[in-house]
Length: 218
Image (cartoon, rainbow, N blue to C red):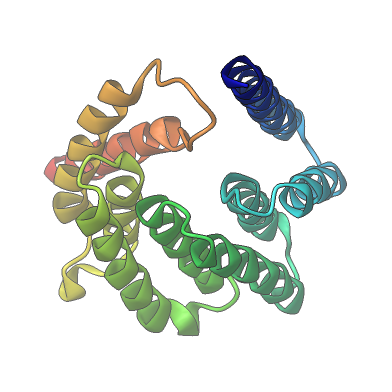
């Protein structure tokens, strides 16, 4: 009897490990497709893949996260304001679903901050409102995990594009971007399917800050 129970447990554990391996493989394959996606149509195909994975793995937050991440990036390619908002609405729903199943709050709050930055692209008139919303939720992201580089990078980006009279500009953005750079360095070689994006974009923010400082000095 004891041997039967142990055998059954071993089979169940093997099945669970195999299911996890297949899940991670599906996510990694979809991320590879995202890296090579050059058009909105290709990106939408990747969104559909992530959403199918999410439907099959209802307790996993990662496919919902990556579906939203892809949609936010799609919105930056779109030129029509109404279409931008429609894409971001879908991304926001995926973020909310991921939070409802206890997804990583720091990563999801950071992604929501990125989404708010996307909302600003629809109209400059939104700048003040959504810049503030982004700042608030990025602070929450940092509180959840001070070692996460993405909210710091996004905060630096937010500050860089905020007028100096409101506490923005390169001088105030650079310290955040440099702090994010250190954390991105620690993240190098990180295994698994968790978020790893942002390091290259953060370097561009640092370069932009330094260029701005030099142009002021000249």
